[in-house]
Length: 141
Image 1 (cartoon, one colour):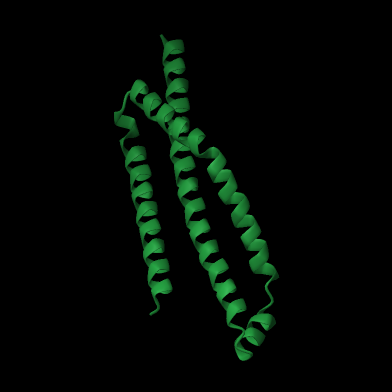
Image 2: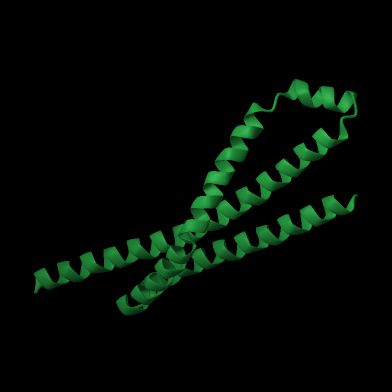
């Protein structure tokens, strides 16, 4: 394999490991939520909100970039690619490969952002449910 492919697959592997860790963290936080106090959940929620807010602009930029790359990918005609291959238009094929790698890396980053948003949303939902339950208990007394 070429060095470029090795570098690309290593970077993708690293991003997938980050995604896996984020998914595990989300799973653990949902499983342990019933054992935590409202204050602990609120603290985690505040932390997640701050983290998301700090990265919001970056996430929005990556989402926009992914959309642009997707549209470029859709407009790329398969016939053109076959023609480039047969005519050995190396620069066009390299550019296509670069865009494909960029698309994959951007998609992985957007997936990481989505998991962070899922974590914050899950904590917000749990906090809201605890508020509702606390209010209901107050009404029963």
